[in-house]
Length: 334
Image (cartoon, rainbow, N blue to C red; front, side):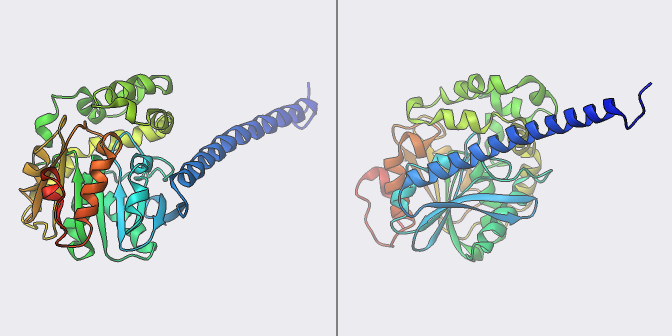
């Protein structure tokens, strides 16, 4: 019989140490590769853009920042990352300090253990904004990001100059009407671990590819970036948690609807998606809502029709009194 500290024990220790080293090597390499990819994409946007991280409640927030001027915070939707804004960031940065965050749990941000309701998420984004040195911002938001931007603006109206929300009705004010329209709305809200068990890494391109196929111009969406971003079980689960919080979000929004948004709100729907329904929803919670429909676009306006969004956002977040160059941009004027 071998003693517990004999040769067999030492061999086992060596094997375990080697295995641990391999795990660290491969996970470290994956993390390094992901970070390098983020750095590369940030540099590809244009000179002066850089990425960073800021610690907030629940972990860290990753952001990409560039430009100069009044701060403009960009909040993406699901299943995307900050990269969804990449086509519009360079021109917006001519007149603004642009800060595109990865929502908690997405992209290169940390993955909180909880708190995916939109009030908690808004507070985390606000904490990141303030730690970057800004106490008053404008916000451009899409999809889930717009659901986060709403309580940010509602709860801290003195800190939000202007708010733009793209392509989603508000929870409690119309979003529920669409639960039966798209299968993913029900699937993502299903209690754990059902979606987590059904959807594996290899299924991500099929699932998200099907989702993006509903766009007006699927070829204009950088789908491979998002396939990679959500080919991690913990990040998929974080995405589901945003949907699982919809009922709590609706209850909170309805309970606080009397605290109406005082700032100008640009409510933009796509011609081939929500259209005027975004403005119809936000009209119920805001005093100055300007409805706009983005032409020749499906749900992913920042990638499908970035030119229109750049022109509209430049008017809305720009100087007052600048006339709209076309009827389609009439609601975008400051």
